[in-house]
Image (tube, rainbow, N blue to C red):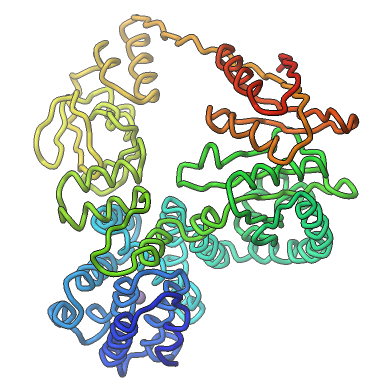
Length: 571
Ligand code: MN
């Protein structure tokens, strides 16, 4: 083993980067000498393997250096002061963050939650701490066989409950898939083996078939002057298959996306054009087009998915995305560090690229280390409109933003809600209309003479608490409070038949309008029986008919559109 195993994975490295990584490598080697892992291997193998994982993802040199050093204080013979002196403040900060997370060992539910809390809070300081921790955990899970049996389940459970959701939330699909399957193997060994045995056969058969499909798509794309960067197939991870099997009566033949064809295109426009071409080749399965480009998933995931009745009626999923979307789906937050490093020629040069939220936050953080503004913004972005509030014992209560101590009390138990008389937040008394904040510790004070008031309905944010309060008022006091129903406009399904000139980019132009208006289409099809006047058929649902007309008028303006007919579909 030598330092080149790490260096050769890094694409853009300067002499300075190489020097720093070599120095950290030697430092860690010395600090861990004489130490062994459970497997009998030198301990030093572990930080090197973790650093290799992150070098593969093109993380910045500071993160790789910190990964090499992540255990030198806890398990090795070095001190934080030494690290700061040799490698600077930033590296020392990251190592300290990782060490702090590691000191709390999981010992049952409460400890576990305490660990979770530290994670969230450290995340607010520097996400790279979590990225290093994920690499650390991935290598530990890969070598879990060597760990004594009694410890394995705890580690696997913690991985499944904490690290997998974290990787998912941070959009790091690669880590998520690997960690999930490794945890699956130890937590449900029988199920794991079953899935593996039953899927591998199905996979092989599918792979042969997909090779043919890929050829066919490629030929068709080239005919339309589209040269995708890559067409390959992605295999669903085993735990993902297992979860789906549970919903499909364990019938493997009912899962269509065990293997999906993945097309990496050069531009967003090409993604939509490719979607059109695929739908011209094969009929789409109704309701299975998912446009995550127009409407990204909460963790930022972008791609177009469609499922079609392929050759011989075989149902096949296609995923279409750009290279950048692909990289972000695999690496998530970590991709942003890689970008900024490659995009920044020299220290001090201005980053002119439009930065994503995480990168902006990193910049702010540099300027205002630990300011409240920074922390607030990070929390908002990371957890969108959820907050996590802790009980004095350390249990996490997940609430919507704006929730009050009454919501919190009902979440714990309806008796606590019904007799809630006051609340302490971080040991200070607060009023019952206090808006709880992320990371706070809330303690509810109860009084058996205290009962719910009608006014409470205005103070609570969760439906759960509202219903409990209403029930109480009705049952105990005979007061019936009508549920105010917000009149929901019904979604209408609309079908457009657009007769348009047969030109390259036509479908793309039409779909771009839906994208602009953030309308999710549910079906796209083409009718080319009349070659001179092909028809594009689009279905979408909308609750505002005026907006539908606006879309119609926009489509009419597209060059080459000859006629549009609109029809309402029955639900
Ligand atoms: Mn470690």
